[in-house]
Amino acid sequence: MKYAVLILKAVLLVLLTMVYIGEIDVSPLLANLKSKYRSAAAYYVEVLSALAVFLILLDFIQFTVVWFYRRRSKVRGEDNFIVGIGHLYSIILVIGLTVGLLSLFRIQIREVLTSLSIIFAGLVLLTKDYVSNMINGMIMTFSGEISIGDSIRIGQHRGKIVDITLQNIHLLNDDDDVIYIPNNLALTTDIVNYTKREIKRTSLDFEIDLKYLVTVEELERNLIETLKPFQDLIQKNSYYLRVAEVKPSSVTMKFQYILKEPNKELERTIRRKVVRRLVEIISGREKFVDKIPELPEDFSGHA
Figure 1 (cartoon, rainbow, N blue to C red):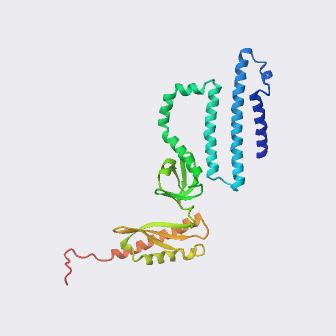
Figure 2: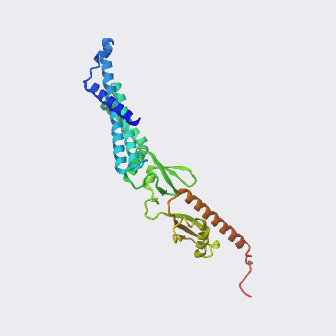
């Protein structure tokens, strides 16, 4: 079916091109019109045929480029290049349709740009953020630094990229919320790409008050013990509890491990298990700390 439509478009493209260049004479079809309408009808036929040729040719170019790329790179779904080609197609399509409609009403593009230059300058100022987002979106799709399907962190947001449009990056977080991050912000913010690193290490960041922490080693053993049900799915000896930052009353830590096979659902399950275990540890030690009697205010330290 797809190839039948493609062949039909090719035949239509040839016919319309021949009409546009005059190889196919359509004047007999206009003979029944009144003489005062014939020149206008001939003009409209010429403009519409040119516009149709442009649309079909643009569609062919997009299809051919994507087809060759898929065949060469053996890509079945969508990746950055295909999304970028789609963005280019949309931009050129809008420009072409605008020019075609102006031509249909016998409006010269140069005259429009000259007479409305001040208005266009104002529009540029009003839409500069929109245009900047579009340009940055194109840069990101073709740069290859981040791709659809990558697990990244932008600022405080972490998740999987599900789409990159001309305006936003669509990020799916662990709660299945879709976060829209403007391309301008993404291009000026530090991005951590967890997918691009060679070792696919999963990391859970948390902060714990010093009064609930006995030793780092004891907490590490506790968390590893919690993940025993998943030990066949996690690489042996890949567990690591790292101290990221020491504050006056708390410590920021990263509990890391490496899954044998990347699995988003498994990551969520393990993350939930670890977080609940941390809550249990802190809750249990908080009750213990609360039972310690406070020193009297007049305690001087003497027997």
